[in-house]
Length: 436
Length: 176
Image 1 (cartoon, rainbow over the protein chains, first blue to last red):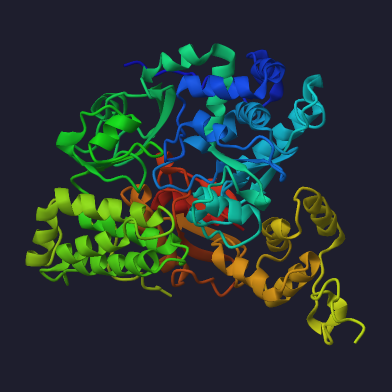
Image 2: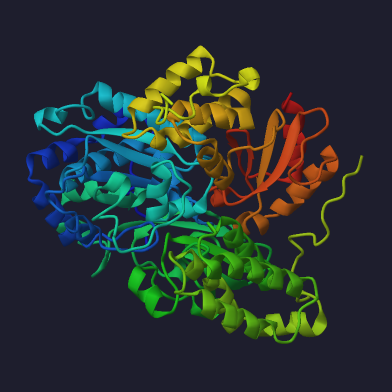
């Protein structure tokens, strides 16, 4: 399959962040068209395109917009989720740093479609300082040209965007965690129902959308739903950005129609794994996705096929692990990530994630006990589906899938008190010693 | 008994010993006023105000917590609850250059721990500590969202990508 440059059409142009370059390429035409349509028509168009959220859950975007009540007493908010903290994902950063106007245009159209409040927010993670400065400059340009502010292009629609910087919390990528964070609280997710589309930020209906999802919207308005559906397959439509990282020769962001085979992506386009090694495991959708073994990677990278195979497309952050990586080491690092990022509200997640991290650490150090893999599976059963948000379910994904598919590696650790011989020590087990 | 329900319970005037009071310099005060106009409630301005305070003072001290609380009519406990939740708000002073090494999975398999351990050994600090001359702080951080150019080290606000121990050795002398 050939790489495409639909979402990334502007990214390689010199000075791509400038509004002049964006306008030259036909930018903001979709916004003009959309502001002359009725908001319901735009929602229907997005529904027809079968666009699904690109942040991780893959929820149909048009459906989400349809849940927003029309005559709510409190203002409706559009929040762009630019919190990109899922390990293995780096596509939104590219879009924001190289083509900020595409995101801004997407927000204008989406805000108009849902009847948004005159102020909307881009919640960008705090570490993306450069991304925030690029966006601020782009917003200033958009305001100067009349695409943001009062009565945009004479449509009567007032709309502006504020960059709300996060401060380093993965859980604020969860939609209710994000809403809590924008309201100035600790980013602890809320119970759902009520769903954000009914009661969200500041008590009003709220639509939280990922950056990539919002950048698809101007393209759908410009080119039509049928065009969007021409990429991919039914219910898994559109151009998609895939992020490949890990032990791979050519890591980076690759754009393909949704549904390219993972095997083709890893072996052909990304050059396979280096140093004559072999692929051991591939995590297809960011750290939360259950891993696939090397024999399972001949699978289309779309929402439904991966769900059927027991994994998930998630944020399309593909992490390739070759046989130099000790699976227990990799799962330990992911467990440590989830334990650190757990907000602490729910006992199964807070206690369970920390406990899983220490068990995995023990196993890797050679202090594993024979019942440990079964203990981990039992704990995962007690965490999954038993906490308020999906972080608990995400944390057990790598644990359960690695024990199921790499059980022999765990058993080797426990029996021989060491990692497999062909693996490399990526982490020194003793703490670093100060030399001076 | 006149002030049973004061407007701002955390206003500076109400504290008997404002000796250790801090205040934003005028340019920060201007930025703060602008921030307030962008959010519907004062509480929602808390995260941006804390970022501003950290830009001014480098870290969030107890006095800063009280001051920010007074600006936004929030209790110091509420403000501190938010400070302690988020990773980026420094609760202790950091060095002039905060070296944040990502050690999450993609960076780890690209030898990020080698960079982290090398920095700790060379600068003579434990992970999370600052050098005695106050120049460098080394911390291990979670995924920085740049896995395609692993390993990544964030120095203050800047990303340094495709790093290695050798490249770190070249970078350190340039950080004066």
